[in-house]
Image (tube, rainbow, N blue to C red; front, side):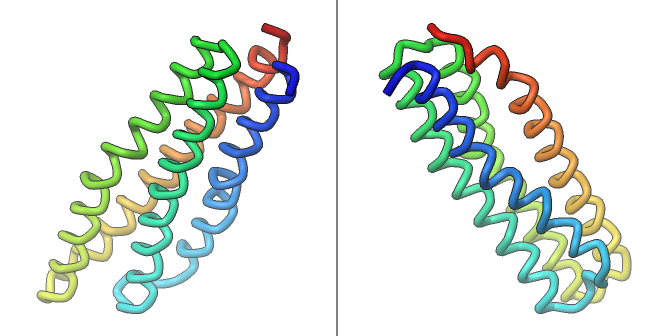
Length: 141
């Protein structure tokens, strides 16, 4: 693979799960999160997204390191670290809000919705950063 092909492959590996999440997560804005199956499905989608980003990021980081693109590998490694260490924090907060909702806290669905928005906005910001880095990664090393 040429350096350009490696960079393009890494971008596709990272853009696919981020793009899917960007398209799938707004659908949950149309339903109430006080419905247990809906909230559990949202939780599952966030959990899966963090896990897929962990794997995609690790693959991307290793590919870029093997290709000798240390700066690009560092950027992807930071994205991977965020997926690895952000997942427990985010999922704990989501579980706390789901438990509070199940215990009868009337404000829990609102806090769950804010958490949903923060996850979507965080993904959008990372996706924008990744998209703006494409011209820099597509150049030959």
